[in-house]
Amino acid sequence: MNREHKTNVKELSGDKVIFGLWLYILSDCVLFAALFATYAVQHTQIFGAGSPDQLFSLSNALTETLLLLTSSFTCGLAVLAAYANKKGLTLAALGATLVLGLSFVAMELTEFSKLLSDGHGWQQSAFLSSFFTLVGTHGLHITLGMLWMLVLMVHIYMRGISTGNTRKLLTFSIFWHFLDIIWIFIFTFVYLFGLM
Amino acid sequence: MNTVKSYIVGYFLSIALTLGAFGLLTWHISTGHIMPTHTVLTVGFITLALLQLLVQLFFFLHVGKGQNKYWNAAALGFALFIVAVVVGGTLWIMQNLQHTQTPNTFLNGQINVVNEND
Image (tube, rainbow over all chains, first blue to last red; front, side, top):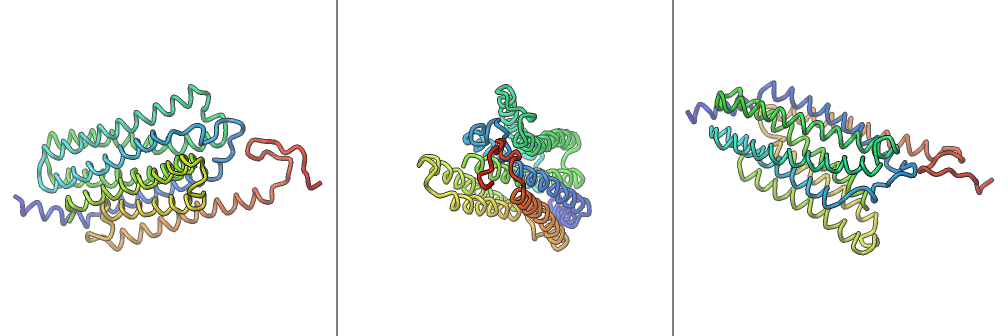
């Protein structure tokens, strides 16, 4: 059983599906590069509306970062649990990832709704338009990722840990780690530089 | 292939790098935006973000391991090149535009009514 599973892991490391997913991730990276470039150009164009240092909260951004970093870690643990053929542990780690992801999105939506209710919507200035586009696109990725995660959990729950399910989990984990990397750059270039 | 140890080390490194950047900014704000200087902060933040990228790539995404490592790394290198062209090129061009922009136009949301050089 164990030996058979080791072969699976080896097969996965040279898998074409994983490589295809990797290419998708990299093209998504280019999409985010365009949004980052837009933000970098527009963030000074505040047109009399709030500037970054008035609108952002450092503690909020730090908590969001820690939530996402931790969810990336638990997602990695889920992959390891699947390699070790432990179904319960895999589901538990994915569940933790889901809860952390949900808390992240909840914090982001709270921040967005506060900005909107204070009159700092995306139509106010070029800075706010590019801010909502960049951070919102990331949030949308996270939300869709959580949907993906839910479907994955149902698959693993119903059919157990097979090579196919492990591969699905591995593709998901690459996607999730990638979103973590994008967030690190949002944290640095939007929040840290904005509050400097 | 992927060990728990690699994830734990990666996790603690990424938390440490995040708190490092957070600490730098808190220090900067607590001294009334004087210490450390903006140049130091800019270099510090970018260095910490790039280190964080490396930590995530090696400890979480395991770049450079597995059967496809050369193809994966080649695709990553190409994507990073495109990212550098898109971001660097945009900033370069837009900075040039702003530099050669005629006066009496919108700049940072304010109108320069009087051009002192005239």
